[in-house]
Amino acid sequence: MTASPLYFAGIDLGSTMTKAVIVDEAGAICVRIEQHTGAEHRRLANKVMEEALEQAGISFDRIAYVVATGYGRINVPFADRQITELTCHARGIVSLFPDARTVLDIGGQDAKGMKIQDGRLIDFVMNDKCAAGTGRFLEVVASTLGIKLEDLGPISLKSTKKVAISSTCTIFAQQELSSHLSNGVAIEDIVAGLHGAIARRAVGMMKRLKIEPDVVFTGGVAKNPGVVRAVEDYIGLKVFVPEDPLISGALGAALLGRDNTLKALARGETIQRAERRLTEATFFK
Image 1 (cartoon, helix red, strand yellow):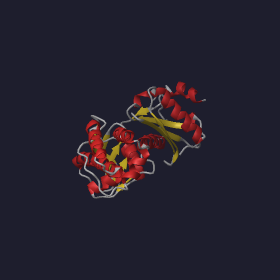
Image 2 (tube, rainbow, N blue to C red):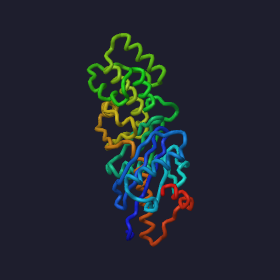
Image 3 (tube, rainbow, N blue to C red):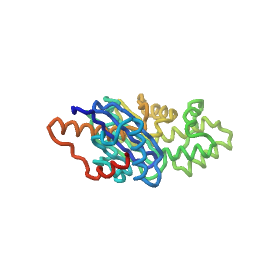
Image 4 (tube, one colour):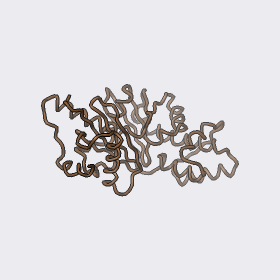
């Protein structure tokens, strides 16, 4: 360890949400930040980093290493390294659930399944061709029903007779939704049916990996207890959800930076930082 404690940051610039996590030398989370992703990725990356530093009460020069991940990782100008989203997610999830073997992540625009063995990512599947069965799909459903997005889960848990929804294509699902409403079907049964359709699609994708416990569910959709229950019903296994299911990528990025840096220091090596950090660091003063 160094005389002065070091910190490590991970920035996950996703298509819908941007997350920042700072960890200390022990790997403990010091602060986490989440903001909606806008059009100006570089400005947003600076903003979330600045906010994270302010909340942590540390200066930018105390950050030994910054790893960027996610959809917009190349647009984090002060990052020392970019690492793929899947690798970072796996590292973050294993830190929270050491026995994780199968991971489902459903975000705003895509869904992916990951297989983990001995703490490492060994295989994955993705469905990113359209927004079907993602957070965006649920946003459209909530808007159509005149319900707050965060209320969909609790409403669906009241269902006593879930209706079958045959499609997660946004347009066709809306047509089915309208048909059920006109036939007097209870909203909670309709929403439960929609959650079931999302779970069916996700589990179908994950079966290509061979689903094994422990199963962990991350991403914004994991905040919806109705979808979590539907996934459990389809796979017949308990599904674990992190306290904050959005930050696993940013957490993993920070931990990978920490791992590599502390190994280098243990070998007596100097921390290799990107030179552009020297100019970007003035932004945070």
